[in-house]
Length: 192
Image (cartoon, rainbow, N blue to C red; front, side, top):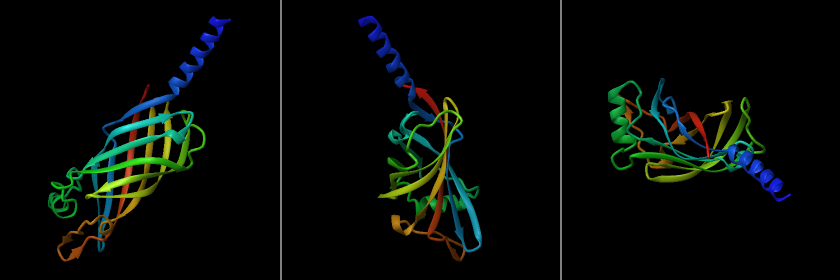
């Protein structure tokens, strides 16, 4: 009877263990910003890194992650604009990283996420940008196209002024205060 009980506990523990994952981002994972100045619009793109990640396939509510982006890594396809953004807006030498640290899922966290599932969730977290940290809520679309892959897509608006950032001028136009930030992340899942 003791051997049977130990075997059952081992099987259950093995199943629970296989549902907990850690992960790393693929090279295609990026953070984008969409900015405007008058009628001109452009997008800057930077690679993202995942420095913390916890995911349980049976319980999304325990999901936690931290995404980091180097503030001097954004590429809009215009070297002058990018240099101006690094020097004037991001002040990259003083504030080299932009960090979003999730705290909790505030909506859509009920249940798990099996392969093939798609879920709309809202994550509360801290955004550290330009030396200012603010708690924000980010709506995300989370999908699991395969057993070992998780996709995270979504975004939020940032006020440059709220983070103490200066809007650069392009010729005679000033960049609009509101900038859209988008996450496009693919996580390779690894069983714990």
